[in-house]
Length: 220
Figure 1 (cartoon, helix red, strand yellow):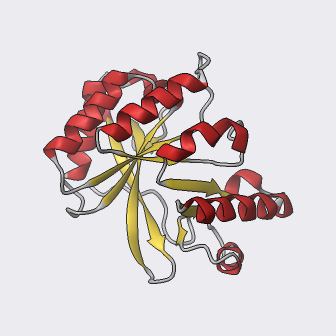
Figure 2: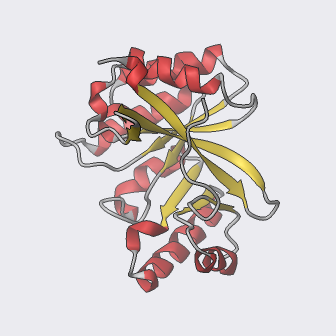
């Protein structure tokens, strides 16, 4: 594995009410010829390599930024991976690091107790936790409920429901209301059109992300 073949791309999350940048989500890409593509196997990256890539990316972002770093379930229950991010947090305290727990098909079954243990460990060390893709795939309320006390942010991916927008709207309204009730930050992902933005405005959603604003881009 050549570390120089990997790079983090940036996609901005916006404060919709104030029309300003809220945070940056960092998305892993692997070079394939002249193209940068999402890696097929994220487990090819060791914690040390992942740490080096994240650190390099942070050096090219404004200090005091909120940074979202994706981990899938396999990575999230790997304490060596968590320790690598905790070390970055200690070395670069000007950045707010938020681990975004993403849903991907994993080769092994991850028990909920493993996820909960990692959530407790990570947040106890000063990092923040976000749940991605709430309400879709296996991320039902019952599945995610044990993690909610350790979470500061929930993300709902509108694109996961196309073309079933009516189904998406009902689920979106539920998760938005739940986030408000639990005093969690709520982000609508997958805003790609003006119509999508109208949905966010109808539900008074404060934060949004998607191709309507910008696409993942190389920034260093």
